[in-house]
Image (cartoon, rainbow, N blue to C red; front, side):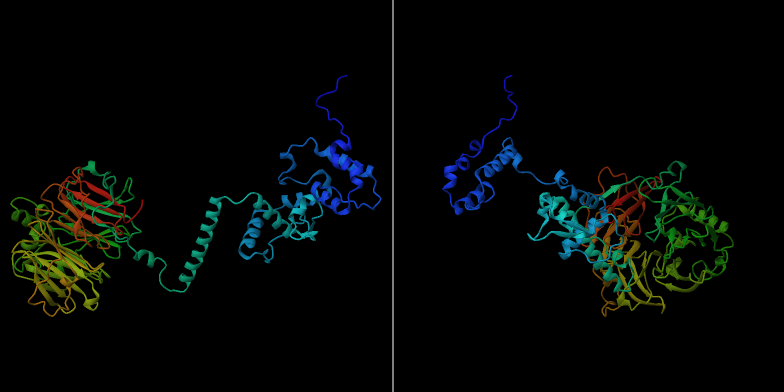
Length: 609
């Protein structure tokens, strides 16, 4: 038969290694040359005088040649990442049992201990597997690579596991994304430990530092987006013009109260999506007539409802009960709030007189402040902000009545006389400043554009000045904020808004009787009478609006005293704005108009939905 081409052909020793196969040449070699050949060709060194025959040496070479003659160059070198070979069966069982019994928790612990401390962890293990070998021999060929020194023969089980991991990472290095994740995790753990140490070293509130931080708002543009209308579920019910908006003072209670001309107060859960209706209060005998007709108590426990009537209602949020001031009608109005010559026998009589003064129209349809000057009403009110123990009520003839709210009886404990002009009281604001030595001070704006600063405890006017550019009947609305450096804004019927600093409501100036404070900026964006002024919670934004003209609203950046140029746009459906309010942390801004819609906007600089 012909010889098969794929069968191995036997080669002689001379063909395998002609140099070593030549006996004459081999006999002439000395020991030094034989040692060099053994290092070069990987053969066993045999001294010339050891009596080893040429046949034994050539047979060894033939055996080695048969094993390597059909191997490619790539097959001569390989990565030893498999299990033990067939010839190492005595080491196979310990290795397999050790690898199978490794748990993920032990692997992470051994790796972290080796990285951080450079030596295995000495902590006592939580449990020990009986199948894990106590020691592993390194005498086999495949385990010799795990040795640190040539003389190592036996390793402990934990050390053997660490050596295997080291060998694996040497062959398969850690990818860059895993290294970054590991460094980030280590840094976060270090920061957590530092935060815990800082927290345990202080007795302050946990949320105090977070709540006190507010983002710094940049001037020029504001990041604002429109959401679904807050009262979309009640727009088809014919609620009428929006008169008052009030967010709950706590950021944990996302509730918005909306007072409309149909004498109903609706409460909505503001979630930025559907804003479901929570409850509706109907008060037929009380027309809602001003922005302050619906006011939350500073504690957030109850709601004060006022209007163009000489009485009020209180809604308890916890019990869900609505109570009227029946007892208060006999004690609260025993002062100059009402005509001394006229008595209010019932709400019906007051309503009839209101219709007569309005030439056939109800009091609720009048401008804010008209009934204050010419009739009995509670349209302008303000709670003392720190504890809510006192309520300031604007009366007729320039009087401001201080009501003891803490006792719950609604008793008038004092009255402040501002002026005898016909303009009446247009705005009330309780100022709280460290310069005022923690005493209660009330800032009052009259229709004659005069601003009074009252020390409520002493019943004394400590300062009086006139709004710059103001004249008789020009004063419309006043608001202030003690946040930041302190602000006071006064709006007039000419569309101008004067913004003053904290020196405007400070009683420490020695020259105040002769000098009026100068406004920091006069906002001239609007041209019709100002009806609404509102600061946000940290006094970085001031909302200015006028009801007389459509889309007359602007947002002012207070640190720079400039208006935001990107809002509102020509397509913003503001309409005739009647009320504006910000949520507790200024995440949301609600805008009410005469069409009965409450537009809801999200200020992204103060919160992320």
